[in-house]
Length: 390
Image (cartoon, rainbow, N blue to C red; front, top):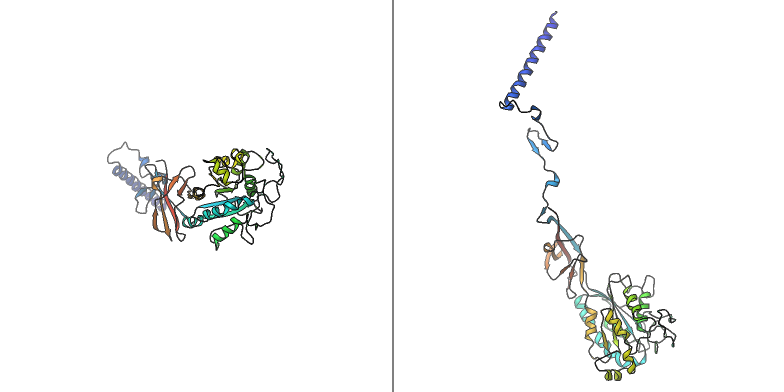
């Protein structure tokens, strides 16, 4: 054995002795005398643990273990911001253009002119249009079928006074004068576009229906029937309705237009009243007209009103036009109602807490009554928390 081999063997023995000694010392110190402990668990590190530079083991908490639901209410807060929304109505007046209406229209126009004061106070976003009671041009047609009588080509076409705007909207100058001009055009023979008169064949229901048909995209009345905006129709006539078709035809058709939320009809004309004798005296019709109250029936079935021309106070119809104009804000998620906070805000800072609202579960919306007003310079901020499962 040469010297190099001897040195290598000696070195190997020394190293082996040192390693065995370290392992025995480590086991003895770690088990504290408990030889039964499985040394495979010693110094083990789970996948979920983090071994720091200092040698400390920190157990990480999984994300799904962090509680974000307390008593069924999420800790997450939903924050929504809206430009203020104001009540909206599209209002159509269908006016009998026969000369016998002269007696009544002056008083009616004066009554409805007060609408604008209320609409301004409510900040209502309205559109107002007019048409005449022109329907069929067949004088002797009394068809029961909806399309049993040939229509005049201008049935349902919008009407206005000479050089007047046919579609009235807020912020127009001299809005009340514009309304009066259009309202009275039928008896002052200034109706534009020019059309045939509807005398003898007044067909208010058909004229109203045809008006909406022409309100579709590209139609002559386009711009009136706005999506999601309730429609209200006021028919004014001193004659019975001669529209072809049944009452149910008009109730169904007027309610079927896809552009609006609802269509309601009110009528001011002849019909069954508290004093039939006085009604005969104040209308051009005879006693048999009281048996032909189609307008009244349609009004009843569409949540509208019926008043006679003999009435001096038509404030009920005016109130009907203004009512049911709530302001609503649709929510992105179903809220825990008691956590909802609504305020008017300026650049994100709440300046006016609102509590004059209700929550509509069916539409998932915050709804304000028609009389609620908003500052157009502020935004409406709505915050709430969502329900959750713990």
